[in-house]
Image 1: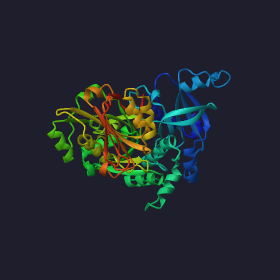
Image 2 (image 1 turned 180 degrees about the vertical axis):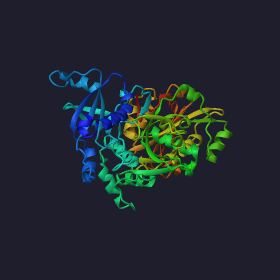
Image 3 (image 1 turned 90 degrees about the horizontal axis):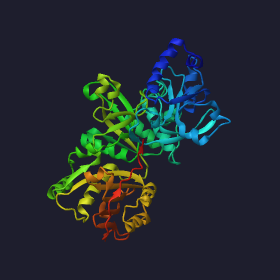
Image 4 (image 1 turned 120 degrees about the vertical axis):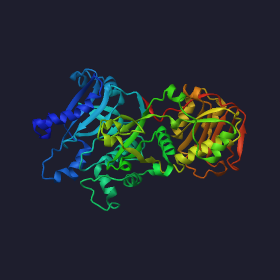
Length: 489
């Protein structure tokens, strides 16, 4: 079929199938395909009319689409015996094959449930699709290989981010390759086609033009420990991280962009083995030492991260210490993440670095009766106030009066949440302390950003007029941690 549709020799078609085999081998044995041709793919057609159609070599306009389903398929299921609900439950996404030899894997959205191994959490989006003319909804994280000419790793990463956010928020729109090229035209000092790739500042600029309040974090600026914590914190917030990979620090010449979209499940053993946090802020470290408090940071857990790499099938797993180990190449093995871009909602003025510092300082200074020698485990993340209040409304373990008070408290669109616990409680996915900050308030003086703080038998909130702390003598109780930012698979 590839030979006929893409107008290539049988030898090339076999070679392309071997390349595609890497994607298929990761799928469960019970996954079957609906194969459709001709298929008009909007992303490839954009590249085709803007670039490939102008070349001397003749490129076909149409693509092949593979729709993935669980179990054996009966053609009648798509017609007279149609049961849409059952068909949707069995639908596991799609892969588009485009005639850009040798990089034929185009726009794809595969559910992690389609994989033989999907023991991880990640962010995901949905996309309306069809299979044999029947409407279905695909769910997963958007993925595509680079075609080598109109889109490089940088453009595919930007495209994936926009596909993800446009499916979740009405104020973002999907972008095509030509839009990315046009957006960067005036800021670039060289031609865009064929693509020579983008640096971290170009990628951040493009995302800023598409409506994000982008923040760039470099390991050289923050140091390795804080840098890894910030990356982990944003990921726990359900934000896809655009990471720059390179081996130039060891004399190499590799530069690459990947997306980090999830992580493995944190085990009880990983929590038990977590060392006491090293705090560079003197006020925090002195307070911890003076009161003999052991603080453990969830962002210090040595996790495996879920990576979207356009050179490989989606959902690769790697530690930050060896983020490109799956290449099985010595030079790629030397690559490190040197910087990353966090695509934030433009009105999130309080970033992760300042939010984490403030949440730690507030907890130690606000007036909670924390006994000397206490073990604390902290988890910090960004959430939409709407999603967080929805979680609170269903969290029966919280003291009723406190829960109702938080639900009735006005909040900005996004909030920073600090959950305090200890190792024993965290292994049960529970917490017993809570701090909420408004993410739209960068001025941290006089409790301006504070929404609510609670621990033990007392809670605090700032007076609306004076911003002085008001104390409530009510027990917070243990409660389940918030887990809606990353989806369980």
